[in-house]
Length: 300
Image (tube, rainbow, N blue to C red; front, side):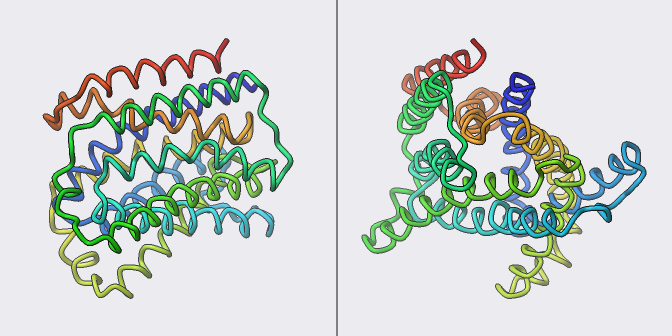
């Protein structure tokens, strides 16, 4: 089952890569808060239908209190808090530098996993993780310079951006550990439902508190193209991707899952060239090769 868990984690990276293309298009039209909220709305509809078919229960009414506690915390930390830091970091220091910090997520997850549940990765896993992290770092550093990063001149703002990028990485790692704690022994789809419900509530609150309520709840639903891309991203992201990640966490080490999911910044290179018409550097290609080599180590 460990090999199946690793395959599920790799499948998660593929799903999140596809969803990122749709979400980028949607965010340009209706904004990131609206995209984050409605992607979870679409996901909960798909998850509820799936749960009804597979379990006979459209909602996780049979979840124990422990699952609600840990998985709700995971949804708030992994979906809401981490993404808030992430998108602010994009603005302050640019996406290229921000993604470099996200490459820290795998070793951070492995460290948290050891502290929380005493989970140790085997030498093969550590070697694979090191290669994947090196490949991701090379690919991210080798990206063409981000014009948004050039606009940031204020030193204090840049320092805050570095802090936010680091906190986004920590948030993703903490979310994975909380998911592992809450989903152990419980149904994968139902566990994902709880995470998504918590994330929906969190982003709805963010929209209201930030004064974007009208834009999110009134204007965004009227943009058909934006909502269409959001719906497509929801299928691959919080529906298939998150479900696969929960399954993977229940069948292999959290550090392994985080590392394989961390391939998303590398896997997104081909669709970025084909669909978003972005330029790719030699370092990105070399980094992708190293990262893929790291995944091979996991499956040896």
